Amino acid sequence: MLAKLNTHTPQRAMLWFVIALYSVEFLDELIYGMVGAVLPHLKTDLALTYTQVGMLFTIPGLIAMMAEPIIGLLGDTRYRRALVLGGIASTTLGLFLVGSGHTFLVVLLAFTMMASASGAYVNLAQATLIDLNPSRSEQTMARWVLLGYIGVAAAPLIATAAFYLGYGWRGLYLALAGVAGLYTAMLLRQRFDAHAGANEESASPRRLAQLLMAGLRNSELLKWMLLTEMADLMLDKFLEVTGLYFADVVGVGLNAASGAVAVATTVGLVGSVALVPILERVRGLRLLRVTAAIVMIAYVAFLLLPFVWLKYLLLGLISFCAAPWYPALHAKSYDALPGQSGLVMAVGALANITSLFVPVVIGRIADVVGLQWAMWLLALGPVALIVGLPCGNNGVGPDGRS
Image (tube, rainbow, N blue to C red; front, side, top):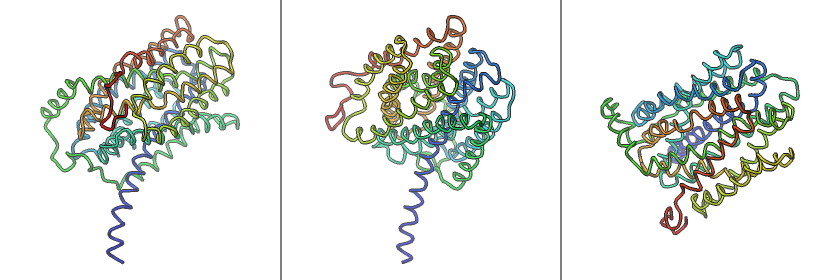
């Protein structure tokens, strides 16, 4: 009996570890989804301009871009656990500051803290999952994104219900701070030693710099990183302005604008659920080629056609078809450098500069000529996939699937 208990205990421990890693993405997207849902209320309450709204995303992204390469490189050493715990604790504090802050600068500081912290605890949790089973990176990423979609779909539904019941956005952020504190306790006893450098002494700065330069010279990795960032124009960047677009351009009320974010995330969740079994049969690249064309057509119709009900339907179609983009593209990035998930994260942080300025550019264009025209910039996402994805025999897997 004792021998049997000893056999199953490590398996249970590993199961709970995997659950904890996946749940990190749920928390991160729950927080992210709340931003899009409450943004119209936050903008009104703090009297922000579109440019200031863009700064809330661009400035934190710039600072995180400088921190994340270092975090990624150190994540391939014995410091991964400390980075994860420090990141989730910083996120807890940032959420509290947003909920209690009354000025643009306080909220900007909180967003900046959370952006850098996310690079530590979220990206390294994802990297650890890939390290645990590198041969199934696409399937791991599909499940990761599914948990994220559950979080990002739940957030606007919770926010919309809270608004209709008369609760404010500040209380939502304070509640999220409490949830993040619980996650900190959940991760406190977990070990992060699935990567190759877990038991090695920390590498010298020179060695870390050499690894980073090697990653930056990997053309295969850079290709998939760039396509991932361009695809994000129709993923996170589109979601960030969906509520504002429906409130300020379409002309619906604030609650209905939050409901549009709920539509996008809920339908995206359905697409993510469907993606998990599909990837067992079809290669991600084939899905990318087909869905990129559909999204391009649907997004043009979404911007041009004046019918409100049709915009909601097209929003759902776009969200459903874009569901395979991030898991399929990001899995290819990990495949380019097997066993070096922290390095992939470091290079990805630098590649992120291609989309960091998108929110403030959209905000500035919206201030000058209107949000309706600024939204056309996001169409570059599906265009990049249509042009940049390999065709024909390129990207065909060893089992013959493409």
